[in-house]
Image (cartoon, rainbow, N blue to C red):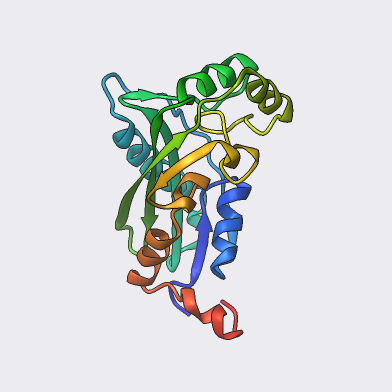
Length: 205
């Protein structure tokens, strides 16, 4: 079927699992390495959108051999408190700084989605979720650090893991906080003619 090839421009196991949850199995995984540093004065929502676009474009350059008919899906998730963008924690120091900033307050999670469709047009969505953490005790901080779940996660936590116990309130898309808002992603794909629902009948993509 024309336009039925999907390339996922991400190496995130969580994004792949979310797609598979709704019956979407990418033909190829094409993670790309780009500079994810915010530009001077760039807001969190702007950063998420820009990085998603850049990832899709970078993957398209690598996957040019697939030719026409490929949809290229990219996403980037940013965690922010106000205008402050939290890092993807790689050290315990970064993780504990994130946890203490998030403790007892609300923050926002933004995911930019970029879909490069056959013919070269770029379709985009930006999804925002508001998450409120309980006030964390020092014991909870130490235990979460010891778990290692924070490593490489935006904001230093993974809501689908142990940190789900910290969430007092969530307003918006849960799958967005995991890393890929499913409603918006599926809507984009269906709107561009990708046969998302074909696998639901057992016929497969």
